[in-house]
Length: 308
Ligand code: RIB
Ligand code: CA
Image (cartoon, rainbow, N blue to C red):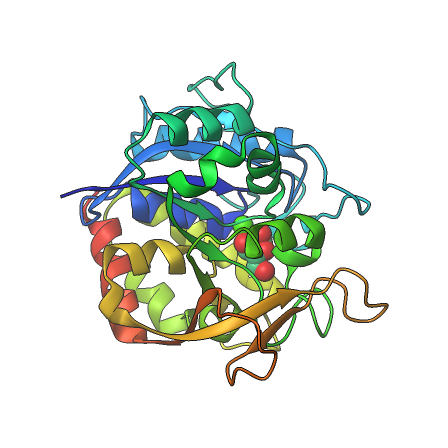
């Protein structure tokens, strides 16, 4: 039985890898739509990259809808230093996509798909949560229609600041709306995504796979690893983590937690404050991913790329 998902993203190299995993022959996921949001780079570039990845992965009928071009309150933030000027530098992919963007706004596509559903769509936000927050505010009736949210974001530490991870830091007010919505959330933060490192041996295994998708991913990892040199054994595949979980939950361990998003702290804006001990007295709102079966993850990812 295919699981229906909507991927909300800001491609970004790891977003691109997440889409390729979700669209692969080893995936039991049915992508209902891809929505884009300002994040790694501007939403226009993110959308163009999403279309380029759809061309590569054969997602010719899945609608790609462009969303918010900035965060709710704070000044827009980008990560071009990680992903390059285009947001997807370093690949040999055609610069211009063939696939066309949908006419509808991402927020309206999210609302329409969720209201029309049987409550069986899982949202997979892997960029800032601006679109999801706006959709919840514009049409609160979507909230009970969301099966669950499996998101990449947050952690018990940060990567954009010592306290805050990029996706949350880019729009903490939006994240707060989502985390306080009452929707079941599975959170794949830095604590687990930093266990999914593309070490040189994994990159070598990848380059031996004879598929256009594998070749593109090898180029992406080679470029994207630049931002991790000196600090990590390889580039972290953040965004494929929630997708991998939805395909095979057995490769992750998750813990119940109460997570609140800091929106006022001078030094802690965007921090996801995780309470695993019930100290806050507030009801748990998240399943927090703490551990990854690294070999299981890489086996799944390599098999996915072999399937193209
Ligand atoms: O902190 C990592 C997250 O920020 C990933 O989703 C990456 O694509 C960027 O959006
Ligand atoms: Ca992303």
